Image (tube, rainbow, N blue to C red; front, side, top):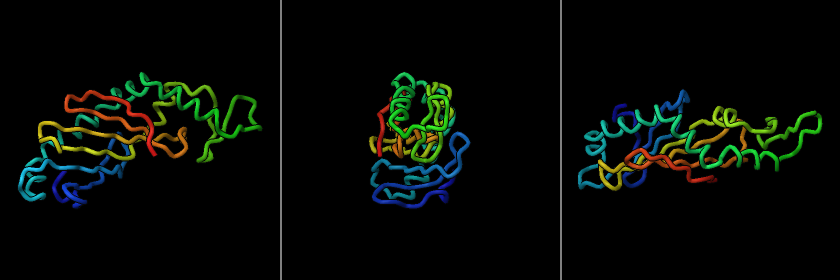
Length: 167
């Protein structure tokens, strides 16, 4: 990643498109620490910290998936699915989601984890370059949560927590 990959956003924000977990075009919003210097110089000087966090995230899918399962997100997906329109033509317990895809119950943990894909990442260094905080926005295909995304946060020690649904 080079400084040319980023475009200036509002305030101390920069934006870029990244590849994460095999998905191209994932939106990255980077919030810089306020250090009194110009934004571009600050970003260029701290690209290694940004790259370090993104490298960790690239390897963190099992950790993220485990946090979601421990928080009961697969069961919540099944609850949402069972509230969708029933597919009457199917002999098994099947529902049609808002995106038109059919989902058969139960929603297994494996199926849930395979449905996850990253939609966006917010990486913040507002509390300093040695205190990164990250929010990861995940969607599912099929869309178990009717257009809502799952928000997962990771602190500077890379402790991952599911923050529930947004949108």
